[in-house]
Image 1 (cartoon, rainbow, N blue to C red):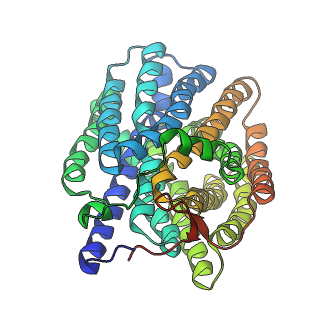
Image 2: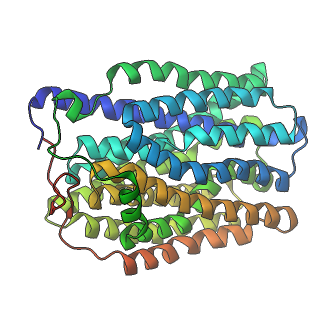
Image 3: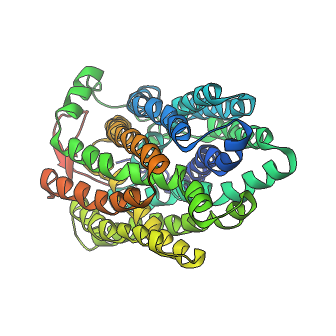
Length: 425
């Protein structure tokens, strides 16, 4: 337990959450810029729905591989260098989008963006596991994952404003600059508790190969990963296809997308906060963390089906309401699923575990995006929305089967002994 200076630790926790929130927001502004500009790019460089799905998948294919590699690299390099180098990379790649001259160059830019962006969640969950106790982690993860919603909220008005006044190439350039500005304070300020207090472990950490074997053979990690395989594709659909859906099905122009497309992500913003708070409250009442997260996941999987109602609603306002309810549930789900890894593993392995689970989630996203492009191009959005209502209950049923809950214990990498998870105070 690290408690050398409670005041300095408290200040550092607030700084860590603030910087992670800013990084996640920038990450999702950069990620969302393409979807906001998609209706415009269809005419500018000639993209149809099927080609757009290929552009999205060029991101997701690389993202799926890099999610796994990024987790291991962050564990290896440490949170400070791992996330710092990643945001420098993805910011440069975001700016490169502005030089795209056609379908192939846009695919290349998206692939390069994915290499860096894959590090954001493994880095964030690792930082939280380093600085926060189990009962605090749900709220902490929920706080920095506000950026997963805040970025999509800010992107439509910001990106459409820049594009309408200066052109779509400038939109990619100026959103890329944000990450370069963020990197400076991050490299200067971030330190782990061990670095701040000059703490040295009594024994060496297990070899990297041994760590990965333990992750790959863990039924609990596979449970989380399979749940992400079913759940993540729906979140990607909300990110990458929702502005196009509103444009094609509800008749929104680029200016109207800027005015209204951010609304559903307000729901996801509150969902992230509520999800972490609800599981945290249950843990405070004496529930073990895994059981608490699973109860919140159950409610989230039910509410996530609300989005399917939008296909039967003609009025834009009510359609946005049901999509927002589902978006609330999606992020409530995501926060608790991301936090589970930190509940069952030591902080030294968290980024790798999140990366492995993220790989499975992105793999599901690749398949779902390919199907979405084909179905939308040849039929309609209706089958996709129906699938989105079924995915979360299926993922939860598998998670519930493979991940039993019990006392909140995990293995200490220094001693090799299992122990009850304790606070870093």
